[in-house]
Length: 322
Image (cartoon, rainbow, N blue to C red; front, side, top):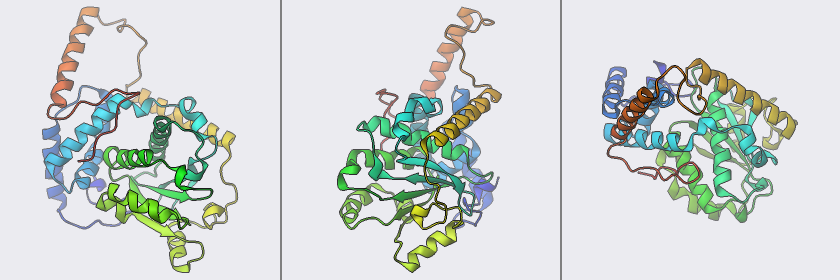
């Protein structure tokens, strides 16, 4: 149960609670949450996952419970695990977000963000692609690691590149639905005009997320040390001061993502969560299936009691901060 007392890079976290106290909090939270009838949701409610929600809410059971239930509602409505490459391939054409083919020195998945290369106008589509990228980044973490790194390249970026509404939703989905998944966010060579944008964005970030944001400039030796400390410079993209010139190539990236989709499908199949064809199961009488459906609906309603229902708008809205 290393998730209870280890940070993503293996170093000990600040010990506000003993291991036994953390386990007690985890047990208490699980009792408070109750059970969700969906097998996929139960898989999401692992001890490691609940521990991240507890840490995000400073081990407050009531706040963590509310946060977990809101995130589960979002997942049930949005269905992030059902997003496939074909659904978002057009969003990826410019390489505005992609998972690097290397990890940092701590085994953290690296997501490269190039907001200046935005190629679509649909905020919902952009968030859908972000969620797809987050799911794939988590799926490819090194065993024992639970955090990722965001590398932002400001090439071609202008104030009009990143609508404020999409930025707020990006922060919200990361903090509320994927708590304690961000290990480090590097803003590489942001232009001077970014300062005014950053002043607007900062209030959206909670304290823990804000602490993980680092500004790095290619002409500043001190900030460049961050890159050398975190990355193998032979593998790091040349756009970030590394020696790897390969960068993003759409066709090869598409093949990697399709392979990830197949791997994800295999994992779901092995967990017994394969989606059945339309209609009732051939071995289950229709009246029995109907009764089970009523029971599941009742259990789900009980699970969500005390939280707001999600809005089902193209897959559900994001949880609100709180």
